[in-house]
Length: 195
Image (cartoon, rainbow, N blue to C red; front, side, top):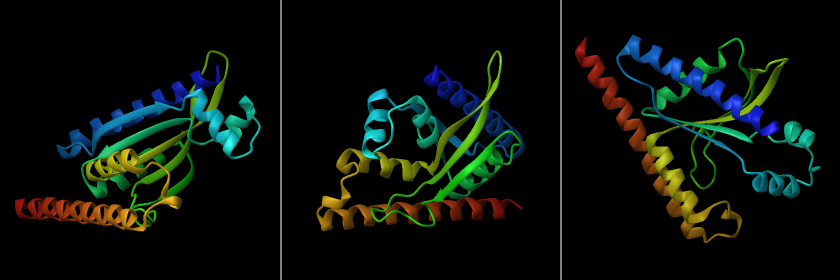
């Protein structure tokens, strides 16, 4: 039943995001969200994470200790959309923001950039309302491109890595971030010239 709760929580968050995207589009004639990807951690992945953290392998332990069983990745076109979408989502009165990690302003050492939120959202069951945690990652198309390729090249093994490989990945991430900033500036300049 626990996995059903996580699936329902993803449905709730995705519906909220779809509504926000439609409203934003109606008001501004553009969509801040390019795409939304969802996932539920596999039982093997959950077990492995509990084992790695030396935690009890119980349903209660999963609920209390893991924030990323249910995950949503929001891909935005522009940098400023990331923060707009995050603020629109977390300002809703039934969404509780538990944590926020800004890896855009403070990238990881390998260059990874994304805004990570852990939220709690209520799901309404036949006989109760239950708060469920969902990890939300928000990034640009360019950041997602980099993260997807980095994941294939070198998933979670940077402690034992070749220093030159890490430097090259970081350089690529910096170039992509600079491109995101340039694209945002181009859009802003075009909008300013319309006035």
